[in-house]
Image 1 (cartoon, rainbow, N blue to C red):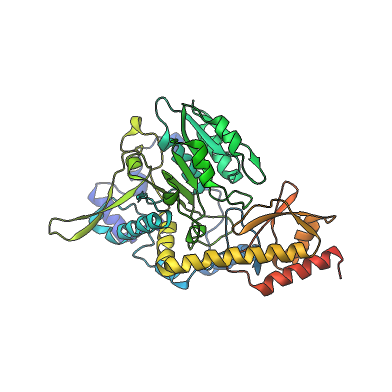
Image 2 (image 1 turned 180 degrees about the horizontal axis):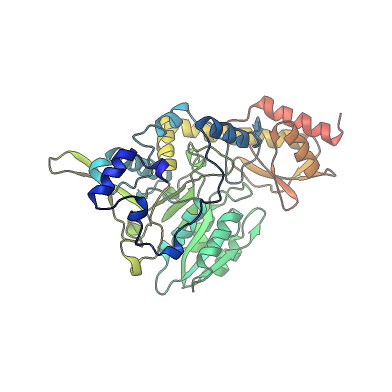
Length: 439
């Protein structure tokens, strides 16, 4: 441990002497002898900086890096402006310290305030928190926001991402909250079954704007079915560049996975859960909210505020144990949204959708696939192979540096974003034809 203490040996001797002890052993003499470590820890010998760098590079080289990605299902390959990584890595922002001392944390607090503001603009809602762990956590926490004494039931679309559904199950597995999962039909929520689930004890309905299968849900139909029951919408932030916002639909809470907002796929994480809501839920939203105020001299100042739900503030009265946020990921999202602007996000959405439709057309044109769901989709769609081994095909594509669609329940979920060029998609098709033995 002494190696990592930022003080010299002389300074340590002086500090020990000032408190009246001779050495480090004397300092820890109050610790019982039977629990003291008698031998060195059985860990590898330390390495130099050069050796550590070589070791880490060797481990990193084991990762498979693809030149083309046609897989989404919750983590998407979007273009990230170079300024995002550059600004987010500046020492003014890159810190794990919680900004409780506002007077020395104005930079990160302002960045979080701007993040909240842009999430509100993106979702059409009135306020946002400073993020939570991921989209699945956000969806689960949204249900907690809606629960009341006589309303302890949530109706949840079974067309949401399976990880979101599993997280919701875990959240409420040990509680008296009833979760009614609505089955799917044609890749979307079964609205008739949803209506059957709703009763006087229903606290909220959770549905995705886009299903796990890429299908666009009929939110107007959902609103018609649920009536006055609070609506939680799970949304894709890039898709909001062209689709109606949760605010326009009259939803009370909007949640989602923010990885698409300037956060690399990074082999699976970290991610970013965003949450926004109407003012009526202001004191029920979990985590941190950064507020804008003025100091004693009338200057603009930013502070943490309205943490009424956090366990370290209210403890026994708190519904949520969320007491931190994905600050660095939220910072990246704020920089990304600032750099892209409304038109940039809209263009990314339009390109993603148009390229996904082109990909669908060229795949079907091979005669090797059929479309599983016929409804409108954003940038993901599901195909079923005709007399072709999907595993063999995907392995062959992987050897060519192509990450193909996601195999799920005997089908394949394909995805395209603005990162996929026409040439890449045409090459993908040529390689599929080759593995299938087509001329």
